[in-house]
Length: 93
Image (cartoon, rainbow, N blue to C red; front, side):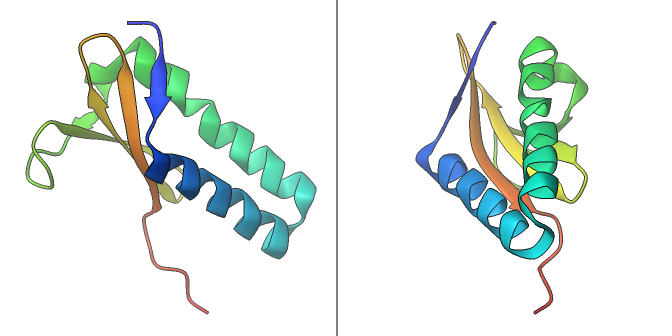
C-alpha cells in the first residue's frame, strides 16, 4: 500500500485545525503543528497495523494519535482512507 486519501470531512477538519492554530497561536506555530500532523499520514500508510483498531467505535476503523488529535482511518484494499481528524478533548472557550 503506498498512498492515502482524505474524505471531505477530514479535509474540512484539517482546514479548521490550521485556521484555529493561526488564530490562537500564530502562523508559524500553526504551520509547525499542521506539518507534524500531516507527517503521521505516511506512517499510517507504511504500517497501519501498529495503530489501534477501534471496532467498538466503528467497525473497521483504526485510530492514530498526534498530540491532542485522533486521526481516524480505514484500511482499504489499495489505500488508507483518512476519515476524520478530531481533537481528543473539547476546546474550552
